[in-house]
Structures are given as structure tokens and as C-alpha cells.
Length: 340
Image (tube, rainbow, N blue to C red; front, side, top):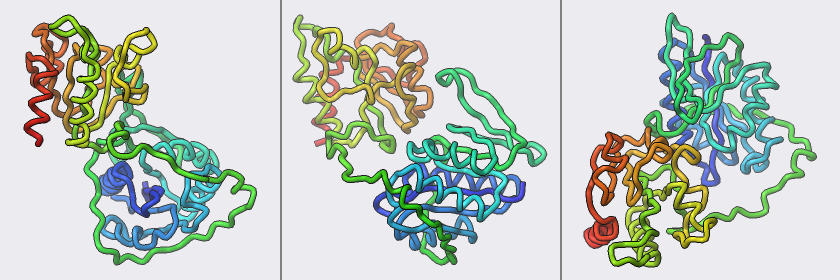
């Protein structure tokens, strides 16, 4: 292996996302482990300063810069990334597993005559041969894979490597010109709408994942449901901590079963076998039993705690590091008071 190419797309603030910076650390570690050179390629608008700030990772930095490349668009993204690959002629291409990159990179790999594996979660080397690891079957089977076809494209999942810290810019940056065909610009971004403040409950970069179980909407000790109280307690906690919100499938689907559910939950919040598998440093499960379909989504949380009234629930069977046998309503009210 002669060269590793790291590629990423800058966000609207001309910065790299947390996932992108983690993938850069992975690319640097890979290049060092096989004694290969590392090249960096970036796509965006007005990204000269950003590119120069990555000089501690590599002195070979190239960019495709222009207003046409600032927004996600398959045609322009593919052309820009293809130009970076042709410029550097790498053996391995490492990229972050973002939605934007995962959409376009398979096409780029095809154009380059290479091979691609997405959602890679680690690698090792043996006799300078690259071996990558990847989960299959909802993170139940871990496979080790090698590939002789070059270039080999890899997208790295989030939460696996420490984020690279950019420094003051000092590297020479080469700009690659890409002739933009006007027909590529038929797709335009008119406006970007995103939830603001507490309304944005899915936060992959948050330090804490707070999971609300179906117990919040069930009858409590007084024989009544208190969904409005639950909504207020959880919303207050999320606002004060900036935590990401998850839920069990049973809670997400309650509204479809004619039962009242927490108003801010959608299928995007679902964690588990039929939902997401997040990688937050810490997780707190409240009023859910920790059964296998839900707990499988927690396997990559580094510190797991749970609150449940049942001492024999699934969390007590080794699925949580700490289990509090208590009423989630009372505990979280007290936590909110302490946060004040």
C-alpha cells in the first residue's frame, strides 16, 4: 500500500463534522500502521483555511472549492470526489460514514474501478495487509474482510476514534479545477429547515443518550396515566443537558395502537433491533425493561445506567452497569431540581 487518501465534505459553516474528524484520525492511524503516505482531499466552498488547518495530519492537501460544491448534490459531489481520487491515485480511500458521503461514494468507487465497504468500524494490519471489521445482521455478526482490488473505499462509522483537532493553518493547499456541467445543477437547494433548540432531539454528537421507555405512558401507582407530566419532565431534562433522546419501539408505536404517547417522539428516536445503534459515551434508560430488542441498540454505549421499578427487569441481567430501582418520575424530577 503506497498511499491512503482521506476525503470529506465541509459543512455549511466551512468546518468538518465530528464524524469527519474521527474518520481523519482513522485514516492517519491506518497510514502510519502500513507506512503509507496520507493525502487529504476536501470538498466545499471557501475551504482554504479549513484545509490548511489539517497540516498536522498531512502536508499533501488538495481541495475542490466553489459554490457548486457547498450543498449536497449527487452529480457535483461525485465529480469533485472523483477528481480528488484521480489526482492522488490512492490504494485506500477513507471517508466518514455520513449520509451525504454514503450516498455518493459507491458511485465514485465504480467510476474509479475500485471496491467499497461502508460502515466500517475498525481495521488491523497483518504483514502490511489491511483487514477491516464490519458488523452484519443488526450488529450480531462481526466480520473481518480483506480486499485486493484497488482503490478500496472505506466509510468509517461515528464514535470509534477520537476526533482530530485542527491546528493553525500552515500547509500549502492545492486547488483542483472541476469543470461543472450546467445539467448537473438541475437539483438545487432552496432552503434548509431543521428543528431548533429542544425540538431537535436526535443528537449523535451528544455526550448522553436519554432513552424513554413505555413505562412513562402506563398507569402509575395512583391508577392513572400522567403523560403530560412525563412530557414536561423529559423535555426539561433534555433542555438542561443537551442530551439526545431515544425511545423503545413500544413507546414509538403507542399512538398507532390508540394509546397516548409522548408528543416529541418519532421513529427517528427509536433505539434497538429495529431502530438505531448509537455510540454515545453515556446512556440512561428510564422506565423501559431492557429486553433484548431494545438492549441490542445499547451495545456500543460505554457507560449504561437504567431506572426501573422492577428489580428483575432485563437491565438487571447484566445489561446495565448501574440499575436504580426507583420511580423514574420521582428520580428525574429530583435530577431536574439538581440541574438548576
